[in-house]
Length: 124
Image (cartoon, rainbow, N blue to C red; front, side):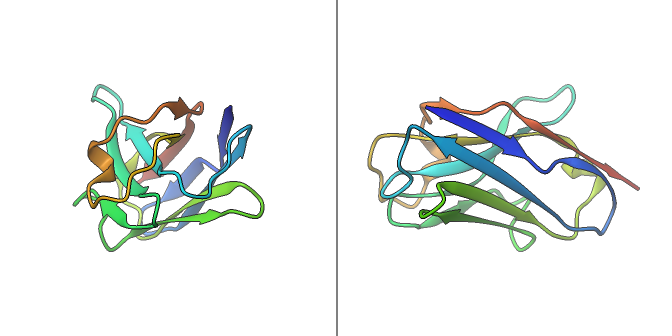
């Protein structure tokens, strides 16, 4: 299983950015997916995920600004980030898990598959 995140870059505060995650060796249908991030000097945090039935779980820090989606046909996961803030600066990771989960708190779950991160830097 391979996950490859892309789309990071340097943007100004208030901008939008879309991250992509290409997944191979794993079917997205019916499995939880998520986006995580790690800011400099901080622990990795879960920000968004979708359960096996597409129930979304959001961290308060991104609610109303970020959305997650999956394209089952092309085995892609996306993170749309709007109204970016300097505190959103971090290394962003996509993740997936092979175990079915249809609850409301997928951010509390352990994800088994991870990609390398893509760096997002937001300048003030």
